[in-house]
Amino acid sequence: MLFSEGMNENLKRGVIVLTWIAAVAGWVLYQRSTGLGTVGSLQQFIDTARGAWWAILAFVIVYAIRPIVLFPASLLTIAGGLLFGPVVGVIATVIGANASAMVAYWIARSLGFEGSTDKEAAGLLARWSKRMRDESFVTVMLMRLAFLPYDFVNYAAGFLRINPLSFLLATAIGSLPGTVSFVLAGASITSLEDGPSGVDPAVLIASVVLFIVSVGISRVVKKGESAPPVLA
Image (cartoon, rainbow, N blue to C red; front, side, top):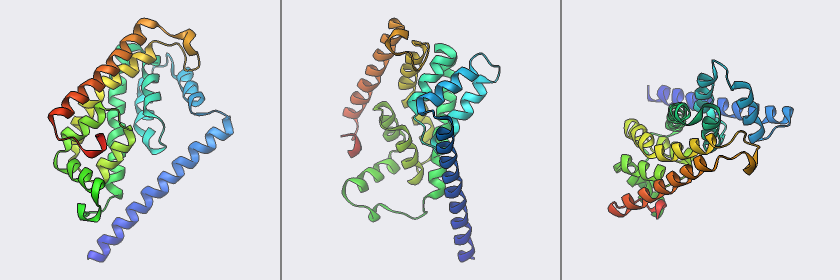
């Protein structure tokens, strides 16, 4: 029975890994066939979706599957502001970003191994892993406020099998200031390829202020908590 369960788990992991490899290969082939880089591909999506009735749904779906090919979350967040403006852009991006966080979390959780303990690691990694498990909400929220790499936090949380509800709530709250700041940055431009000439200074300044506030909040909270070593 145990052998059968082990085989089922290995089969599930194998399917996930093969699907992951196929998705990455498909993304690479698409870029090579079109000659478009990351920014060019995203601009093409923006040009196609702008004004379409299905734009918000497509944006949320693209954002949700983004971590499979490690497409930069920051670029898609900026695209949300560019496509939909500040208000709708924030709403669509929050939905998409949290969906993508959970997709990455469950992929990593499915690839993780039950029964792994901190004894298997040492030093910094062991302390960081223990902190993430014991104080999931605060640790993840601090990581979000401090703008640690979005997908790194997602996959680490899933692999360590932290509580999914704590992870989702901490992500939703901790990512909000950064999400708003990047969406405002997107709303301040007319194209990803415009450069400085296409920037709305007032909206961009508001974006920068929110970014600084988010980092400041993380510092204040960290002083009142025993922050994980990775944030030191």
